[in-house]
Image 1 (tube, one colour):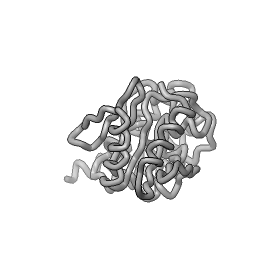
Image 2 (tube, one colour; image 1 turned 180 degrees about the vertical axis):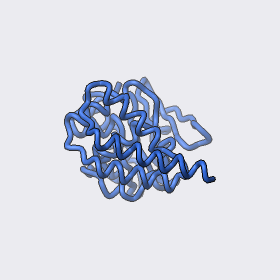
Image 3 (cartoon, one colour; image 1 turned 45 degrees about the vertical axis):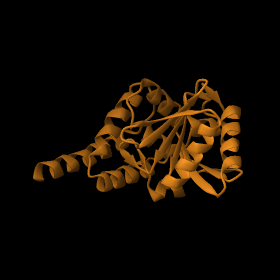
Image 4 (cartoon, rainbow, N blue to C red; image 1 turned 45 degrees about the horizontal axis):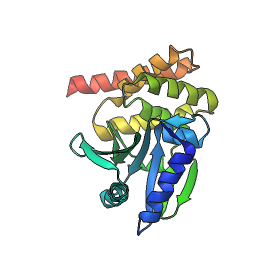
Length: 210
């Protein structure tokens, strides 16, 4: 597990090793720590929009003794050293795309030398949590929802964008995920679940026609 100070030290090290200004979006438990919603995280999650910038950041860690391996046809770099784990994504977070809106919605920006870490909005953290099937992500989503003023309209608009641009009914994953989070006695408006069902109905009709 990695705490906020360790994470900051790692980001500072990467920034000091980079020769050019580099941007990344920090998501997941890593972002939650910046908001004070979580004390530690299993993985430091970073999303890059440039392959060269991701490779440069990964090389800095390799030179510091981190072991790198690829995952899912090189979509993700996994780096690890002494129990500290870093996931480096490129333009996609599993099934989801890194949209321009996610970058624009960042709530905080932290400068670590040449590394600019943009902290994902609470809405985008919740949305991206449904990309995996881990019980801990449901608990994380519950904590974010309870401790943040979530704008559900943002999540609905983003999932519709994701559906259109991925060609997949990703809203179905979100609906099932939020059902599980709701079962943890989390206050998710019934109106939002109803709107998600309507979005999914449209996606099912599209699949039938195709």
